[in-house]
View 1 (cartoon, rainbow, N blue to C red):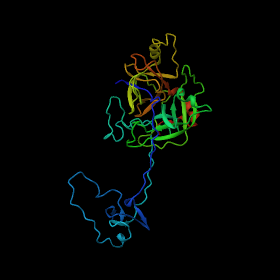
View 2 (view 1 turned 180 degrees about the horizontal axis):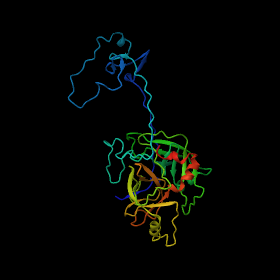
View 3 (view 1 turned 135 degrees about the vertical axis):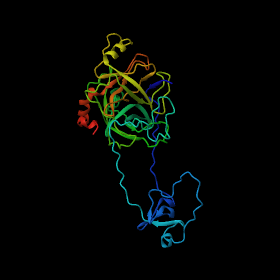
Length: 373
């Protein structure tokens, strides 16, 4: 199987409803005055147990069956509807601390990788690349994958202009961004994915659709992202960062061949070497682009190995590069190429560092907001 990455294209990502956790049944907790009716074994020293003490299966031989201690429960037991229930003081309310995300932190071994492990060549772990986004559109009341994207801040997704420019007209189709996705055909992931509505689409003012110069766009979400272990932003690069000579990672749900391949259900990852623009331009001139082709300064190139590449339709996905500060920075966005995975023909990415001023202007945020705090 090749390690080519493309978007899901027209492959459907079904809009899967997520149901809340309802409390029902006799063990859901029946309020009664200043206490709550619970099974007797959940009441420890007059308060509902929160740590499961004495109730956990330690994976050893079972002790003798414990009898229900009805004797001595007195009035507590008589207040509750169940014969094995007591009225027990509720535990103190604990306010859950919001997850604090820091940019560019990869979950190297994934989240809960004890269960979700890499079964196939090039598969990412669940939650390994928490800034990977999927841009979705509604088609016949079904959400379909349109292209990739990259989370850079709580309200903003970077992607490529050629993916979303057609959705900016009067007849625009509503877009959504999905974060925290991993296996597109499963809801049994350790944390659920989250969908966000796109409120505004910003296309670079000098985007050229034919040559794909300045092929960058920002999606502004209608509400802030709730960060979680599997959802967090990548750091933006600094203008002085040099990625040429580095090995960086491209992620997405790609095909394993350019024309006849199949899309992946589970997110793929490939490592590609970043090459300098003069070398990239010379290699591209040996393709159908010809010897007069000029590579725009807004691009960065990576990948020359046979079968290891990003591919058609994967636009907007991140080219993530590890730097000396111990974090990943967004060196590029998948933009274009000549076929896919052809030896000595690099993939071409938007050079994000070239557009830092534009990003700051559109988001109305100082560029320092996109770096580690």
